[in-house]
Amino acid sequence: MKTPVPEDGTAGGPTVLRMLLGAHLRRLREAQGVTREDAGWEIRASESKISRMELGRVSFKERDVADLLTLYGLQDDEERNRLLTLARDANTPGWWHRYGDVLPNWFHSYLGLEAAAALIRTYELQFVPGLLQTREYARAVVLLGHGRAAAAEIDRRVIVRMARQQVLTRPDPPQLWAVLDEAVLRRPIGGHQVMRGQIEALIEVTKLPNVRLQVVPFRVGGHAAAGGAFSILRFPDQDLPDVVYIEQLTSALYLDKRDDVDHYAAAMETLCVLADPPHRTADTLHRILKDLDAGT
Image (cartoon, rainbow, N blue to C red):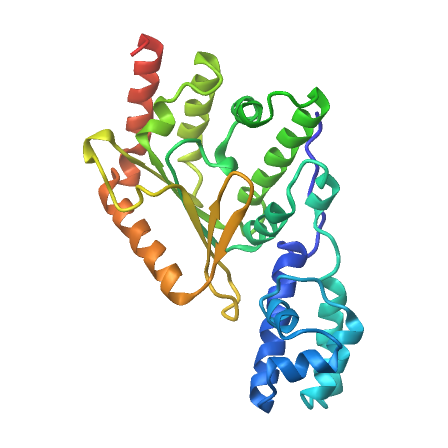
């Protein structure tokens, strides 16, 4: 199996470009005092369509962007051309679109956000985060949810997961701060050899300068994130808000309202305090590896 190499260009593909363009359009509209309803009328669309455009959650037609820029009174030709170019680029599919047969539509957006993030903070209580999984562990996880799928489909799902991980070793990689519940490391996904290889890989990953890994030990008991796994993504462009990502069985939630983000950020801070400090993670992993080999 050959892992695809993501194309050069904007790291986040179309997702972040749409978010940036949407933020520009919202500021222009608000500066002119134009309502979403009036903007929608101008491009023969609904108020909700304008809202989705401004949030970067739909693709852009270049003609619609041009009409909106005219409505908003943008007369600077250079700025107008820049935004129209952004609209064209925002419709260029990311590398993961080639795997649309095995990826749900709601996950495409996350891949774009993950690739464009400057900081990814994630909490997991069942599985090792996808960005840190070995190929064998990833296959075992995929089989749990798609055990009846054809071998070729399983292979493609694993390939996508491996391709995602290139974000951590590219030039100017994001910072990854992962907090794992101890149960993640004690649960024998794939069997003894798979878990041994996965824990050994985590020991190695703690040596990466852009990865911080912490473990919440069993002795902590209950804690602020008992509701489930989540990730918080922060982007280098100040126009983009932090986004909380919560994956469900058949869909996902993307939260960017300030109150929601603050709530999850506070939970993450609590987890980081409760967890053993990062400098002790390698020792914890070695101890768990020893217990695994002892069959305890």
